Image (tube, rainbow, N blue to C red):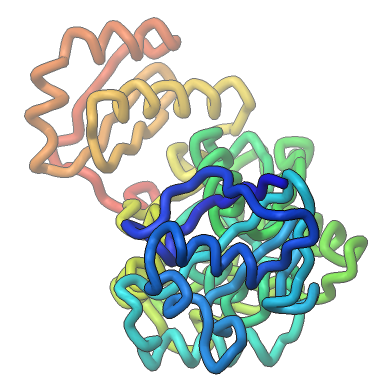
Length: 356
């Protein structure tokens, strides 16, 4: 029979992905022995400790955790996919902060994660999968017009990469006229609806707790959405442990998240001055404009929507690239419905439209 071996990041540089031929009736230990024969003894050293699967090397067999299927004696069938999940990069011992995060999540026993596709919630998702096993974790991503498709697709890709079950949850935030009016408390209204629907889906599937990626760095920003999370009982382990964005990014790199260097992201509603009505068409217009600019290889982009004017914010060191393509950028954004296209000389500033 043939067994598919995928995402062997624990064995990166040792074992390629592909199919392995095994006798009928083989078990996980037989697959590992065969990989040792093909690629050397380091395979077993990375995966087995004291005759058992190493706890920091989660393995999925057909989408289910090997630990619950018999560990090394877990049976394999023809065509089954075996996924060796992400260890710590470089095989290092867990940093203390990562250990604290995993201990906090382990105490919750079973969690759903509000996963936006960003680094913060990505670290929480990876830590939960490591601490609890992928079968005790559910990733939930809100599919709403305020979330760019590129971020939704990234969430799908990262969850698949981690081997964690993942659901997209449609959330019609624009159906709420109070939110669409774009008041100062829009983030509160949005999070109230989004988290409420994620919690409902999670409970339907047997997950009573929802955790998110809110963190200590958010405390210094204008974040009314955190109030909604607290009201709904969403657990914010990064915030509880006092972890801020620089440390989160470092830990995301340590656990091997593929998008650990991703710049901060924010929902598309933040591109509109408070009081300017939010519509599906205007949100899509901003998303398309940013996709065009990101196509130039820019690392961070915001297109602020001021009616018929698009105000572009990029990092100061990347302004020259926009100016090199000024004619194409202006033409492209005008084709999306903007009349005027401006490059903000102050550059990218998080929350530049926030009050105060």
